[in-house]
Image (tube, rainbow, N blue to C red; front, side, top):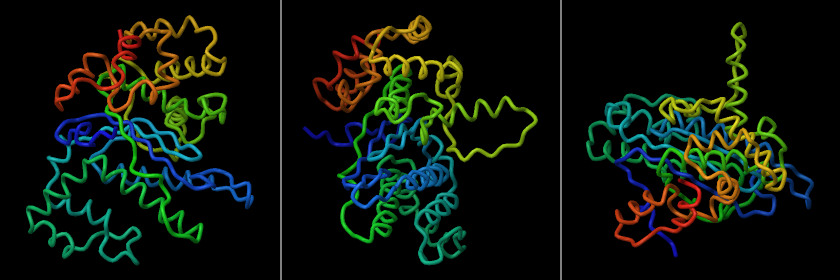
Length: 325
């Protein structure tokens, strides 16, 4: 049964949301078309650049992402607390950069004073745009529509590119956020596209590894073509480091590659700190979307979320009780 998005997304609160967009074509999103012999892997760079562009305009932070052959995973954190501090002028500028009036000459063009004033003189319009600039639905709309238009032009066709509206899960607590992030980062490994996190192209885990390696080279100037991601230290309030997170992804990935074989002794202490059941972790980090539907978190968090929207429960309480101690 479909759940209204308003029962998941809370626009007035800072929240974390796992979003999935899946395309419908034979050639997929970024895959190889065996019939024509064409590769569409270059579209991954389109998506990454678009994510970076939107991340700079929206009051939205990107925690994790993974760009697969036929779908996109993102873990987003909306920031209504930041957008409220923006002046009316800043809201107008950001919106006009997102939706320029003169589309034919829009590339890298700054909005004119006339265009900015047309928005700032209308308080209701400013409020509408302010709300949209911290809304996950508008963020995904601006991402999906842009990619669909470019793909249609390249394919010389019209019609639907995505199978429907993006799917969304609200991630409720710290342990669930790390669980979801690991699930996203291990997508290429589960799909047997990559063997290690550092070779998983177009993923946030590869970006974090690259950034950590480059940060240790103190005397080198570098310019990584990566998205601006929320740091693990920021995400966890300093209780978990980027290196520890990379170790967690690596150890979990090794277990998945070994067909859920023996669990490394190093993995267990990390999960104990997070109060996560070690055996259940492997199952959930491989099957997050099957074990949870709309809300991911502890059993208490799921019950609270259900109570907030006058429901008896959300799917996943059994899994939550097993994995989140």
